[in-house]
Length: 115
Image 1 (cartoon, rainbow, N blue to C red):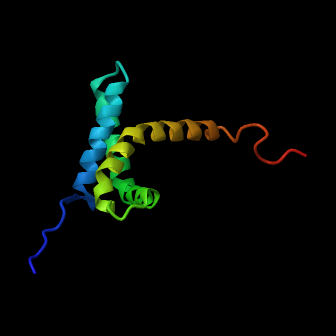
Image 2 (image 1 turned 90 degrees about the horizontal axis):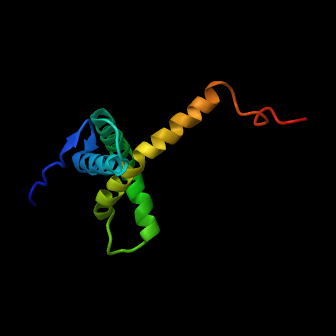
Image 3 (image 1 turned 60 degrees about the vertical axis):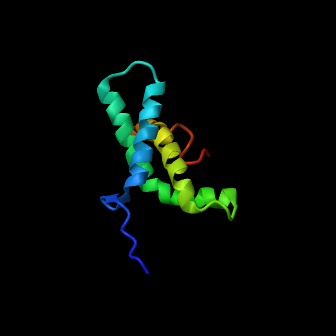
């Protein structure tokens, strides 16, 4: 049996996931008009990070959702990585807004329960 070469990786993350996420992050950045080069690079980096860490789980979830024996998890990874890269910055922006909201305390009436 021939030896299968190891898949290229960077810091334990598959290089294919990082590339798909970076392209997704860049595509998301280019759909927002204006902005600096720093913002475009930052968006691509965030998309790369989100895709790199979340693609393995996302591909397994997508494979269960598609539920077709003809489509393997490996074939879904590129699409899932791109989609996560595309939405990664939006998810991070929403998380930052949520943290800023809670920084000064929970919203009124949220906790403790009203008496």
